Every structure is written in structure tokens, then in C-alpha cells.
Amino acid sequence: MEIRQLVAEEFDLSADLGEYAFQYKLSPVERTERRTRFKPEQAWGAFENGQLLAKLMLLPLQIYIQGKPFDMGGIAGVSSWPENRRSGLVRGLLTQALNVMKDQGQTISCLNPFSFAYYRKFGWELMTEHRNYTIPVNQFPARKNFVGRVRRDLRDIALLDQIYRPFAQRYNGTLLRDRDWWERSVLDENGHDVVYFSEDGTPQGYALYNVANRELTIEEFVYHNEMAREALWTYFANHDSMVNQAVIKFVPMDDFLPFLVDNPRFNQEIIPYFMARIVDAAPFINEYSFQAAQAGTTLKLRIEDTTASWNHGVWQLYVAPEGRGQLSKLDEASAEAELTCDIQTLTTMLIGYRRPQEMYRYGRLAGEESAAAALERIIPHGTTYLMDSF
Image (cartoon, rainbow, N blue to C red; front, side, top):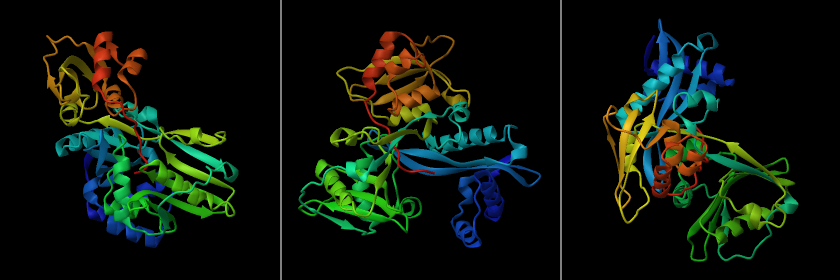
């Protein structure tokens, strides 16, 4: 078996496997359009005798953590022919992807799993959830008088991104978007956008939505302050003669709407979403912003990682008073760890999805209770969120 990047001439091999595995069919026009966008350097395949047996895409992306961009390797399109499954092909591809990400300086990786249990075997862990709301029109938030104005269908990517970025920086795991991502992965050519401008003309909120079959579907609802939220909801309340209900997708877990409305008994789903894993622990820690304190913190931590061997072992974690971290490898034969966890647990704590003391309580973080409390103090609180997909 050979694992390598695809070449441009192998687009059809990749497309055929994708159609079969994900159960869709491209029209001739769609296939031609995708061929023009195909980036073979991002496609990795497992080959035997010239036949493509399995593949994945490795996307060079960035996410925010503690308001700072981190280079991230996005895993997508993982697929294999049924006769080749359960033969270690995907394991080989994922292992290769981890090595490539390490070499490229992508210290963290994210993916949208078909099975959480499957990807946990390779070190990925659940990193975020989101809510979906279904709200009958008679339970919409009340209309409010607001200063400023709303404008519909501006289709201005630079404007939308200007509003999106400060909002995204409030969370851990949100994607940095470039113009190409907005065009190909966010905006729907048949959809609508609405933007709220404050009284002085500053853009402070937007929503992306569709209206069809008496249903309002809101794909993104982004706002900087309460005035922007109220203005956008007042705009949507003015659709009351057109719709029976609204479906709001990708709502962050810290959303306050159920508390703010008169009747919070509308349908609220919690959707487990993306997974993440630290690719290279030492440089990730070097980039990470810990909680500042009066004195530095030193902990000895054993990390277990069966797929990325460079993370496996006993490390000394030092966090300086200003919050800058450093991870140094220790001699396992002589070093005694104060805490032990796998790479999944380390990821979920540092990205902010779960807290160290929670992980200690449920046995995912083992060792000295005082060390777990020290780790709790130096990891900032944060909420994970991702409204994109790949």
C-alpha cells in the first residue's frame, strides 16, 4: 500500500469515491466546477496497484483560541470503498495526516465525525456542541424600538466579516474565514442577509436566513450587543404574516434567548458537533494563553498519545506569571508525574470544552488533587463554538 498526495489527473478517482461513500451524485456541470476547484495537494490517498482505496482531505485552516488564531488542520472527506474497510487504511491516512500537520506547524486538528467512538481511538475528542431552536411565530421575542437601522441583502462579504470576527473571537474553536470561504462555504446564493447598523452607522450585527414554505430558517445570528440582537429580532418579527415558525441553527451554548423571551417552552435541541485533537503538544502550549497569576506554576504531566508518539511521555509544564506556557520533555525513567491524562482529555481542557476538575472528578485526569486544582486555576474559562462545517 502507498499513501501519498493525489495529483490533478486523479480528481475523478476522488470524486467517484466521494459520491459512493457520502451517497450523492454530481451533475456533469457540478463535476466540472469541482474539478476546477480541486486542490490535489490537500488530498491524501491510500493506493494499491494504482487504485485509490481510501482518501481524506487535509485543509489548512485557522481557529480562534482565547482570541488568538491557531493554525489548524481540518480533516474532511474521509472515505474508503466498502471492500477495503476495516483494513487499517484510514488509520494509515490519519497517522500520515498527523505527521504532515506537525511538519506544517498546525498544532491542532478538527473534524466532523461520522462516529465519535471511531475518532477517539486516534486522539480526537468532542470539542463543541450547539443548539437548534424551533420557535412558533407567536413566541418570537417582542418587537422593540431601536435606534439605528437594518438593511437587507447587501451581499457584502467584507462587511459581514467585519462583524463576524469580533464575535468569533469571543469563543474557542471558531473559524477564521477568508473571502473564498465566505463565498463557497457560508453564503447561499438563494439566501438573504440582514445587517444592523447603529445610530452612528457602525455595523454591529447580521443574520443569514432563508424564507420558504412558511418557515424562517436562520443559519447565522451574529451580534455585538443587545441593541443589535433586539433590532435583528424585531426585523424577523415583522415576518409574522409570512411564516408559522423560525428554525435557528448553530446557536452557541451560552445563548441567553430562552431566559429573555416570555415563553421559553419551545423546542431546543443540543447537537454534539465537531471533534478536536492537539497535534503537537509542546508548540501548542507555547502559543496558548494561560491565566495570569502572581506567581508561576510548575506541574509534571504524563500525556498518553498512542497515535502521535511525539506527544507521549512525561512533561514539565511551566506557566509564567504573565500566562506564557512552556512544555519540556522529561526522562520517563526518573520523572514522576503529578497528573496523567490522554491527549483527548488535554485537548478538551485546553480548548475550554471541559474543566480540569470535571475531568478529575470523572477519572479522565488522574493524580494529585492539588495538582488538578492548580491546573484548574491556570486554564482560562471559555466557551467553544463553531458554526462552520467541512
